Length: 149
Image (tube, rainbow, N blue to C red; front, side, top):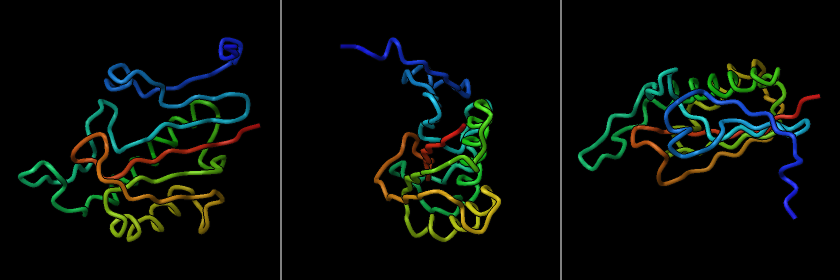
């Protein structure tokens, strides 16, 4: 039985090329839950903000751009949440996927506290090291789940 046809969904997108290429929505709201797809540090045109310099093999040569990438990633996520009348205050769970766990830990406290606007963001948080992300110069991707009334 296919019940998805009767499921009311609201969606939001950034309007970047890979939404059509891959075929997905950046965020979907079902009832009071907003599911935010993996966000990354891109500008309005889809260009990566603070791309990591790459080595001869096309892999990040250093991770010093983790902080500006993380900050832009949260700004992009917050912009999506705003499409539903939500903010980062409504986030109940986040998962950070990073290429370098040490580089992420070095800046995550500062950036997360800044973006959430509190010393201890009121959400469950996971930080997971991965071997690759969607774009070679990308260092971080963040998924969120938010609940709104």
